[in-house]
Every structure is written in structure tokens, then in C-alpha cells.
Length: 227
Image 1: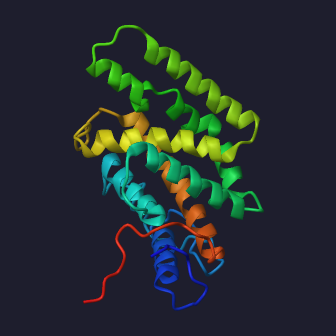
Image 2: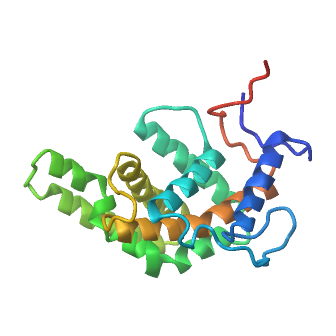
């Protein structure tokens, strides 16, 4: 079974994407999908208010992201390749450059902050666990930041998205494995940056998926099973 978004208006996948995008709109995180309307209607923005802590906001947004690009399980490297393919297809649909514009506009803000943050860089944690004092993670960190800057200069949207979401994945792992607690001061900067990035990028990703129903997105991780 493949996860091709069907053209039929009754397609469950299409309806799910519309519903997902409209929920984002109702929560104040982006325009309503399918209605061409980007106006706010006065609802309280649940994801920027005080009703949820930062970790919860990030986790809920991450669930929405993985629901949009869900694929069959595999090794981490394979998942990274699949994300690369997902971003390549998505960027290929955006002839108007909406996703690119959002990404590069925010490089000087939450993206740069995230990329400069060693606490969302996996080799840092590996070196810490292994008591590795060789400094190799620092060399890798410097090269990764340089690669991100080159991606901006080259306008390489896919590469920059992969770098950003690799950092966000490390953040996701730290949260779901107990790296932050309710109203804790731990991870505040990176979690805040992660929430801001997902709130900004996810609605546009969903819009592109709805607007290009023939987009091939791979196998469904949890397909609907009739009993």
C-alpha cells in the first residue's frame, strides 16, 4: 500500500490533510487548508499561550509532522534518507518558493540558534556518554554549522531542512526520554526554537501536500484496516 494522496475529494488521506491543516488554523498556527483563508478568527492560540508547557507544545507539533510524513519503520539512517526524499518531493512542488522563503527568513532567528546549540547535536551527547575528550564532536559541530551556512548561501532548501530536522529529532528524543520536565528550565532555548520552527513550517508543508494530491509519499506506517 502506498501513501499517494488521491485526487478524489472523498479521499480519506485528502480529508485527513484538510482536517489537519484546519485544526492548525483553528489553533492559530497557520492558514486553513482548502479555503484559501489565512485570517485569524480570534481563537486563543493554544500553542503560544500558557495552557501547555513548551515540551508538550513541541511533542504535539512533532506528532503532527510525523503524521504528515509517516513511513514504514527502519534504521535511523534509513529514516534520514526517507526524510531527505520527503523534503525533496515537497520542495519540488513549491514553485512559488513558499517553503524556501519561510526557511531562509528564519535562519537568522530560531534556525541559527538551533544550529549553534550543542545540546541538539547528537555527537555531543555520544561523546558525553562515552567520556570522549578527544574533541572530535567539536570538530564535527563546527563542520555542521559551516554546512548549514553553505546551504543558506547556495539556497539549498532540502539540505538545510535535513540539517534542521536532524537537530529537531535529537530534541524530540531528549524530551520523550525525560530530558525535560514540566516548567523546568532545562532545554528552554532549544525547545522554544523547535516550537517556533514547527509552528511556522508545518502549515506550509501541509498546504503543499493538499495542493499536490498526486504527490507520492511512500508507504503508510499505520494504514486503515477494515474489520
